[in-house]
Length: 442
Image (cartoon, rainbow, N blue to C red; front, side, top):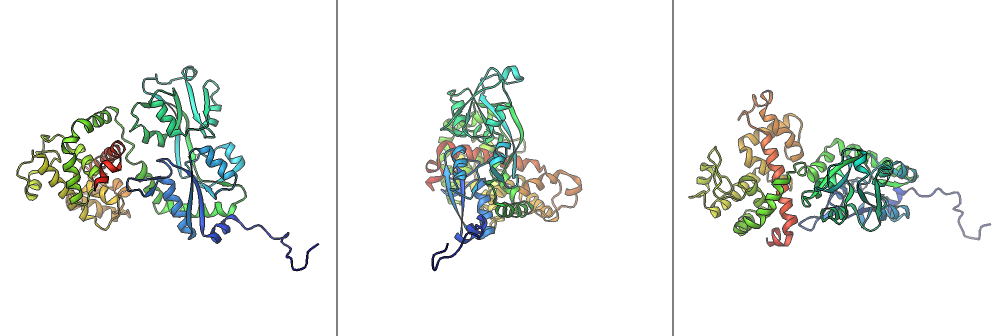
């Protein structure tokens, strides 16, 4: 029975979650603070693969984003279960158990699940070897389901630590082995060089956003957005931006680099900081470039005649007022000026692409770089995106492409490797010093 003036809402349909999001003007994302999800960069700006993607999706809905950040995957899933957010975006693997309780958006990345141990541990070859290790895994992670398929493995769950923490524990020999996605492992092994993947637990694990059941409108909206996002090469850009530089890993080279940060860099660090600041370049990037060029050896010389800590050619050095290429101070300041000139070639491009494109031009030469940009346009590639230019540059060594270019043949793979290594060294410097002790002096 209705009271006078009351409204019968018993037959009304509940408002769909997508409509609720649009009505309140806010999309609530549940995530974790990791390099593969969401974090603050060296300029204290929010960034990360999940951050970039969720910002783009929210823009398609014309709403703002609220982030709720948790320490572990378990906490993220529990928060979604309790309706504390709309989407769980935290590098989550699609699993059979999770699909019983939640729905998933489209798969945006495929990774391998690895068993990671200290490099001193013997590589795991067969099931007998698996029986001889102890694995500690993060609570409610997808790795638990994979481990259940390997009865020979002895494993336990840590309720408090996430996978990044456990990888640190392995590096410090506090934990024998753990599990990790190949993406996170590829990033962390550059800082914790003693960790090593010993066994592939699962291949082709799929990552996707997770939502509560019965929200078909929201899932459909995510699918429609992602189709356009992928077709516009935005997904390719994200993968290159966050993972493009981690593909190259050389244990010996990384150890040498970290050693030379202590033995060689201090003599030149102030020059890098001052020269970079005066030319609107990140000091750590300039130092990283110099290491790629000469390993911070002021007397370095190549068979082609380039010399010094920034490996300048005689014509370039002369044009920039260098009287002695073996003088580290002169060489560094000239190298910074030359890199600044390369940046002006792409001054309408946003960072970080501007710096990466400028480094490629520094390496391959302005003429060949312009050729590559022209070729990119012919191939319907974006000449202002590094993720696309890195595909075009290697074509400069193929006759069917270079025969019609003004400057002809070039070893186009070299600038791609050059930029990738510099990005790796730059990130290692940032991790070693921290923002306030290097770039933060600007």
